[in-house]
Amino acid sequence: MQTFTEKALNIIKQIPAGKIMTYGQVAATAGSPRAARQVTRILHSMSDRHNLPWHRIVNKQGQIAISDEEAQFFQRKSLQEEGVEVDSNNQIDLERFRFEPLEKIVDESQCDH
Image (cartoon, rainbow, N blue to C red; front, side, top):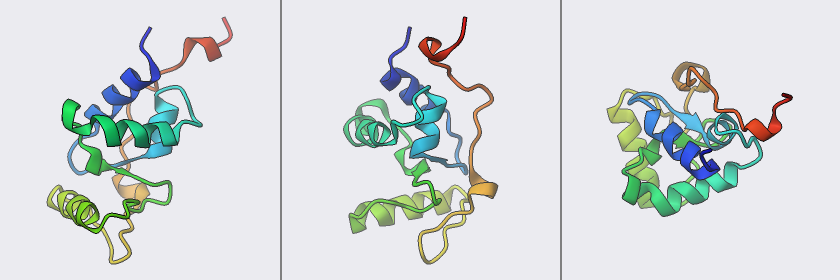
């Protein structure tokens, strides 16, 4: 059985160019709806090693959540180059640009068998 981290990594890698997911959406899809902060940790510590498209992850309001100005600029620029519209408040229309994986990964321990 895959760990939460492995599931989250696989989900993040599947986000296509021009689409975004929220931290919480990745966590829920990976089977742990309350683990949005864990997704943040994964992105922070593993993006380079796993070549993750970290710029495609935003907060639950659809905003770029990074406070570092250089990283925020890079994320905004990368999303715009992929066709994602980002307004002057770093806001993205979740209805339009959210990626919905076809299959949610379910934690078998939470299922009724």
